[in-house]
Image 1 (cartoon, rainbow over the protein chains, first blue to last red):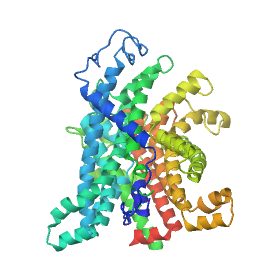
Image 2: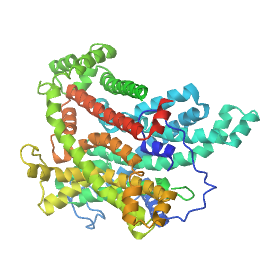
Image 3: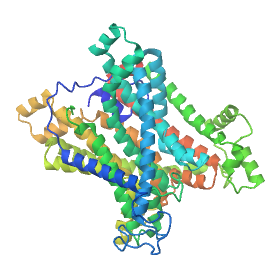
Amino acid sequence: MLPGEIVEELDLPGGPTPVATLPEAAVQAPRRRRLSGIRLIAAAWLVLVVVLCALAPVLPLPDPEAGQGAIAASPGSGHILGTDQLGRDILSRILWGGRTSFFVAALTTGIAMFLGLAFGIIAGYFRGRIDWVIAGVADFVLAFPALILLIVLTSVFGLSIRNLVLGLSILGTPAFVRIARAHAMTVSQREFVLAARGSGARNGRIMVRHILPSVVGPVAAYALTFAAVVFVAEGSLSFLGLGVPPPTPSWGGMIAAGRPWLDRALHIVLVPSIVLIATVLALNFLGDRQEQPGRRR
Amino acid sequence: MAHYLVRRFLYLIAVLVAVTFTVSLMLSLPAGDPAQVLAGPEASAAQVDAVREALRLDRPVVERYIDWLGDAVTGDLGNSLRTNEPVIDSIRDRLPVTLELVILGQLLALLFAVPAAIFAAYRPGRPADAATTVSSFLMISSPSFIVALLLIRIFSVELGWLPTGGWVPLSENLGDNLRAAILPVIALALEPAGIYQRLLRSDMRRTLDEDYIMMAEAKGLGPRTILLRHSLRPSSFSLLTMIGIVSARMVGGSVIVETIFGLPGIGRLLIDSIGFRDFVTVQGVVAVIAVAYVVVNSFVDVLYGVVDPRVRVDAAG
């Protein structure tokens, strides 16, 4: 990590971000890929969970919101992952809850990434006054205590997935702006951009055709890490009863509901916990730029 | 430097005003009659009026905010809608609990991260490095509410070593206080410990590639001297910054831990007040957390500027 990157990775509050000088991937000899096995497992897990969640409506699963008779049945006994405190099938609730979680994570990350790329590239390309405003607003929002604002937001406006997505994407955008801006600033100095400008290309075209492709990579890597943060935040809020409104299944809500059963039926808490941690872990491994090939450490 | 400090201070004030104003604004945004929405669906007409009066919801948001701010700077955050006690008093009672959790959490995180990072950086790519990397990732990826529940199951339910919750003030009994704090602190420290380990390891790797380290090795200095005396300090700048950021974030993160373990900190106060729809207290608690958050972050920025003059030039330019 170089100084500029430290700043963006740490989300340093306050003050304009110093210009990042990025390593030229081509100059570095390709490094031996460490932990590639783990990255493969991480990707496989994500694909498995996403596919199963996507197929939840067509899989032969019991109704996730209806009791099946046996209360808090252990895994294996007719229900692969057991039943919860109300006798609902846990596997079914994991997959239906996963649909909610993945929907929230994907939508939030998509919005924050889109806004971050747009504002970040504009700021990094034009510099000057517009950059001052965009970077200033981003720093401002980063200085807000995010979890606290989300808690107040949902307590005032009520529980809904829309409010959750809205709050998380607003608070998530500044980090994307910083990364996109830092990379756009460096790329804007490169010869091919100067050449495009010299040959009369319009600013909009330069930003979309020449700068965006170089900026989208690192931003996409951060998007995976950000998605992991969204999973944790959504889980924490749902656990506090301030996220996904019940009875819609969500992983955080399932863990919260199993809490009184912690001493008798650990699997109600354990199963969604393992699935949530594994998913967050997979996203963090895939999003970790230190482990990516061709990047200096 | 003085110019820089003044700028930082003005910025700090601006952020504080923005955060507290955002909360004020949020309280008047609900569609329809905000007082009715905030008081809840079962509230009587008298309760709705009490909410409207206490939050001054009948007046424009800017006027209302200026009033609130004027009182707040004199230490008056209003009276709780539930207990009618001054909000500032309940915050003052509960702040020490949250601060203790954050301080102990930081100590525990560093106690793990610094040795683990040095250990991993010393021989990169070995199984020990890979093992610490994987465990740090696992720590970063484990949400505190899950960790807290699993700790309760293991250490309170199974082993019966530690209480499942509750709090004993530090002034009453040090031993019992620590027994009550240990599980919440572990739950709070796990994620930062992983972050610190990753950060310090990667910074130390870069330092250890420097020429002067090779020089030190050539001189025949042992690994202990090289690691601890030559490379730990120059590698710890970004760790310092991170500690500040995490301290601020931990104040917010302790909401979850305090709720699970039933600790009387300000995070629990926030959640309880939301449950009772006591938005006067909510507004006060958020203001205090925001002040802590912003002040700690600014302090770290300034500290960073003192330690590393290049940052100062950049920030002022």
